[in-house]
Image (cartoon, rainbow, N blue to C red; front, side):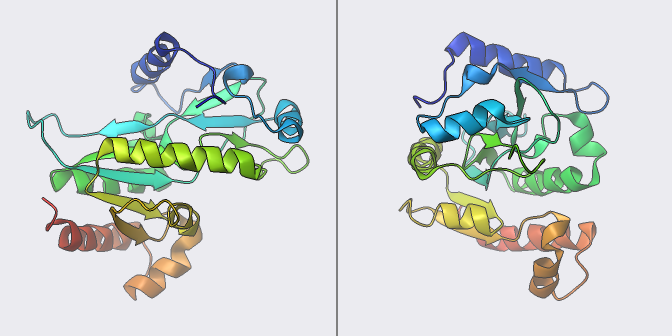
Amino acid sequence: MRDFRYNRSELELLYKEVINDFDKDGWPPHFVRRDFFKSQYKDFQKTYEISPSIAIDLPSLFEFDDGINDKPMIVVLGQDSKSDQDSEQISLGTPYGLHHKGSREILGRTKLYFEMIVALLTLGYRVYLTDVYKVWVCDPNRPYYGVKLPRVDQEKFTSTLKVEILAMNPVALVTWGKESANSVKELDLNIQHLIFPHPSGAANGTWKKLMNQSPTHENKLAYWSSEISKVLSKSI
């Protein structure tokens, strides 16, 4: 995509840095220069340049190291990255922050996300995580709320997203939350689309109505595991 400026070796180095910091305590930050991304929409570029916080997530791939090389693929689609720390550089991460051991094992919210991913892996899938919008820009006037990307950038990201998803050749696409689900409705992917509420606490009301029980960590995970097993068992 023309709006991102990097080379292959730089991208490989970024992934290596993320992998090397996996076992470190807490959530070690990673950064890239601001000119890594440039909007072609001049007014938005001005906002981008004065924003106190920018965040980008790199796609990530999960699978069990079990010697099986022909696992079917599931794509899990997020909306965008977020950051609540001021920086002159771009905060770099992965969808749901699962590149940190602490995010998988300690932080309650993201621990649930990881356990939901593991449920897919246990069924025999690879899981590819990516975002609809590859860059998040903090509103300079409302920290830490994101500003809406101009339509020209939104359309570039969604057109690129379609190519990205099809390149993974998935048997199904999972979206968590209305925003992610709505983002792919017009892409004409012809891929099984599994729509779920976002796992975060913000969607607890929706989960409660869906499950007809308390939206605890345990209940969400049990419901998710049961439902995906029913639907996806036909895809293997």
